[in-house]
Image 1 (cartoon, rainbow, N blue to C red):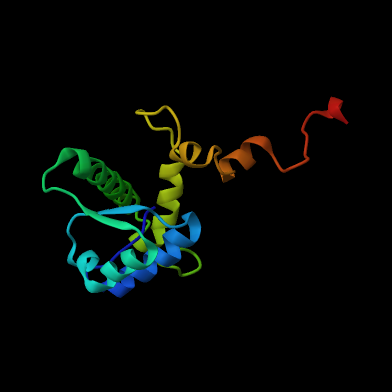
Image 2: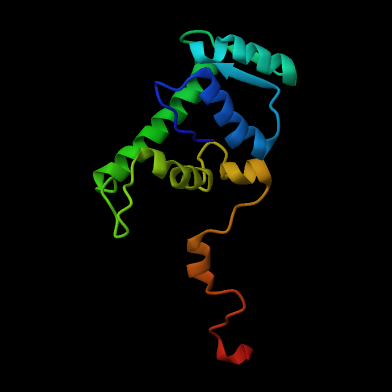
Length: 154
């Protein structure tokens, strides 16, 4: 999941975000791997893991097996954000809504999760759920539900 965080987020902010955005959608996890961020090592997180019987593991510095996937994902997300900014999407739209990286995160996550990845030949959503969500592209390609453009089918 793509969750926008800020440098001034507290351990409590992080815990609430994970509860609201992750656990409420996917259920409890067995293990969380941290890059030794102090926010995840505080007493709050120790209590959280004890309460829910989860495990907090720490990645080894410069260890490709644990750091590589996360770093690659971060690099991909940063590239996606840069592409939006390159097209001026951080400006206000016709409704006066300002697009910034936080408001773009859900759309970027959907784009990432519904794109076929070369390593698996499948989308992350197919691997996670067994199906892809219906997208605007699908609607435009097939037309409205129940509509047919072939007169012989009437």
